[in-house]
Image (cartoon, rainbow, N blue to C red; front, top):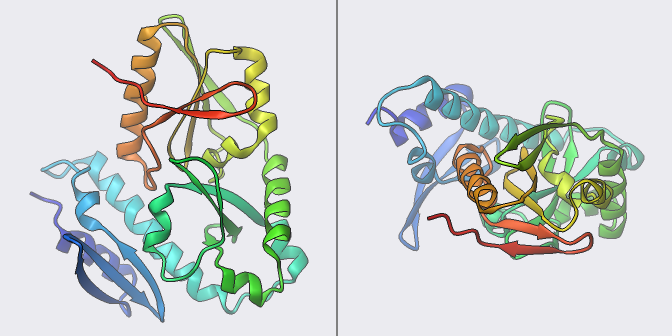
Length: 266
């Protein structure tokens, strides 16, 4: 196998030469803790490697690049955050909600600010720093004297101000809408009721939603069994390729509530 744990760790070490990397085995799982200037990230390289080709390929090289870039930038963002001199007002203008799998918080050494969403998803909050973002902890809110209610209200308002952009594709009588603002919050737009209702006017009752990873939100007008099969295959494809995978479970939307729906593909 070309892509090994050592190969990935060497890539990270190249960008963070002063970091300390420690291997940890817990509950039959192996992960690595990367300590950069006192800031830590827990990563499961074993789970990531299974998504790569056995031999070197352009596709897998890109996945590795994105994986390493994400880790390195987030750690650097954390190290810069303590020296960030911004007002409470600026902070609240640049915070946004983001969606992750409920298990996401297990990899954090801090108590993150979160809100419940569905069985498959949980809401966290981030401060947008331009090229990267900082997921917010309760400690950070206390430092800026911000309440959770203030954060949630402002993050929700900021999300609603983002533009709606999407591509459309039709297959076998089914229509798929792919949100593609490419601003890091495409997946989070699942939290914007105005967007969900906008598409409900187009679709009606056969309204399905997929959130395979943070940068992909699929809204589908499903007319037949073939459409469900296509949607589920898309979900699995994007889930395995996403940098921060969320779920392969599909949601059905009735203009008010989201219902989790497992689609069985023969």
